[in-house]
Image (cartoon, rainbow, N blue to C red; front, side, top):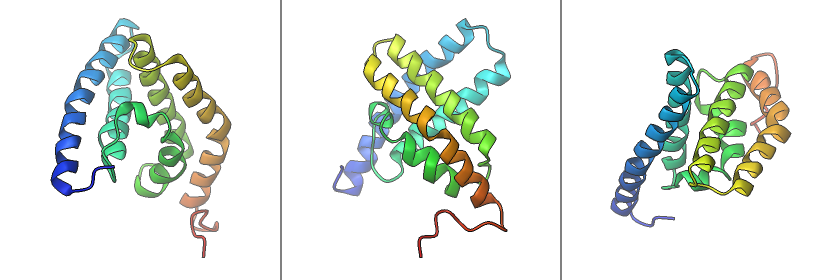
Length: 148
């Protein structure tokens, strides 16, 4: 954790530069896979938001740390903070993030076990995240995030 604001901003800037290169690698892999430009753009946008907004939101976390933050992102932050959150966008965002981390694994940026952990977390938690999102977006349902 970065203690002072200037240090935090400096660390975030360093991470953003690294993330830019990682996004270029990811984009190249998506192009090589023959995906359409619109699909590539959607995946890049979803991943960019995750690694350059969420992971830098309250602390300067690298892409590698993001493997272990996926539950906080898709199961809480994304639902509460993103006006476009729906059960469908949770699933599509998770798919983008999985593709990104698969690309990072293929390029030696993360370990296979870390990628497996990410995939297992998404698989095990997806139904809960989608259910919480549907309840959160339905004004007739109790807010799943209101603990009091």
